[in-house]
Length: 103
Image (tube, rainbow, N blue to C red; front, side, top):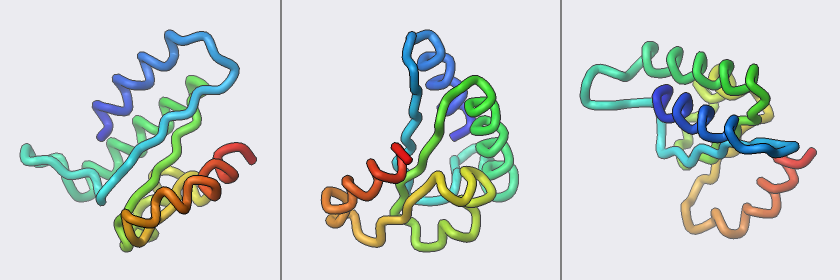
C-alpha cells in the first residue's frame, strides 16, 4: 500500500485544489506476495500516509476488516477511517463517511 499511496500522493500534489483527499478502500492489512506484510507493511504504509499528510493530503480509509481497529488507528489516526461490517451496507454509509470527511 505504501508504494501506491506515494504514487497517488505525487499525482494529487500536481493538481491545484483547496483540499486533497486520498480515500483507500481496503479489505485488510497491507499484504503482498513479496514479503510486504505484518509490521513492515503497516509501518511502511503509515510512513507513506505521514508523508501524504505532510504534503497537504488528507488520507481516509474505508475498510471491511472487522479487526481494523487493531492497526488502522496507528496507520491513519483515530478519526481517519471507518469500518463497514458488510460491503452491502457501504452505499448506506456514504452519508456518514462524507460527514466524517468534511468535519
